[in-house]
Image (cartoon, rainbow, N blue to C red; front, side, top):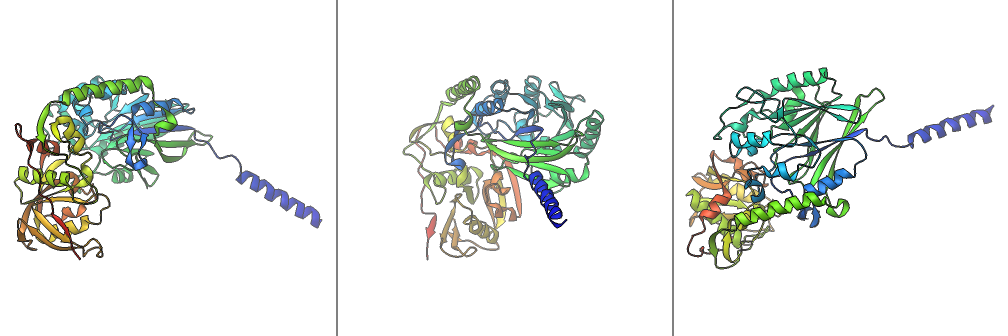
Length: 498
């Protein structure tokens, strides 16, 4: 009897071990998501991945062609504003370059409204795949080329899709005639109910709520808390390089990162009753070496870029020598850019983060395309009223930001890079006078820095700020004289001391 009992227990244990080590459940379907492409729609060497060639629509199409399970591909908006290739067509390039990709739905963000509602409405009307706009109307109707909600099949599963644009998207913008953006929460509740009534087994929200200066503005997390029934929120308009996820109750919130060096993948798992049991996110880097490029899409992109370069080759100024940048210390390019910012803004000082300067300024003739290379972002000049003590603290905090050294104008800083954090800045002068802790100064930075996107987030301690809505590239062009070479900057603004 004892031997039989032992044999029985061993058999049970073996069975349990066999079950535990059995084949892992495979996903039933996938969602793929891109957002914040920002006009970088081609493959290129990417520093974040050891300068491996990654990204772009042509690699994305090749990647999708390898998929063996059903999927739905979605796009979250902010697709053109940071490059000449994107902005010269006012965003219409995407209708051509991505026409053959199997996108199911799109959304727009406030950044896609930069040329006005009429321009964006034309793009929406002519898009090869629909925009899903659950809280947006034009003259009281859903815009042509858009739908208030959508259900797409991923195999045998119904994926319900809604899209929300922040009510703040049209604020302080011109040429918004006819555009109306309704309350996000109310639209979400109504649309989620409609999608469930239509048989959606998964409800996916395309969200362009993004980041707002208004603390009362609706966030993805709060929406997830207040609107039951949303399984997945695909977030855009954050402008961050790295992918991010968050779980709020049963809702998975996903941000796939920017500039299309990868694609967000959400694996969907269903039980035998065809109910969603799990959703798992993975950031898939689009290495060209792994997936190749679709040749037809690659040629369309090359054609768009050739056209853009031709349009952007008009000279805008002269430079007597190359101005080089440096991520880790003061640089001639950083000094020149900061000087441009301070002089244009008529401020007492200016600070610019070095990571925003993405290429050297060449010697000789400077074209508009060169300026896009130097500053490829649509950051706006922002004016601060800030006390001297807070300004000194912001300069101190900036020294802790890796590979993003603060470039300054109007300031001289003595610092000890080997000292402990919080005590590296030893002495600061502003326009030759010692910085006064209690005095209020007018300082020019960018809205990107004010929002903490550059890591230099201590400037938020200013007393008051004003966004000029003038792009940094406009300022750089203003600094280039038409008939003479631009003056070279004076260095020595950061001085290392013991």
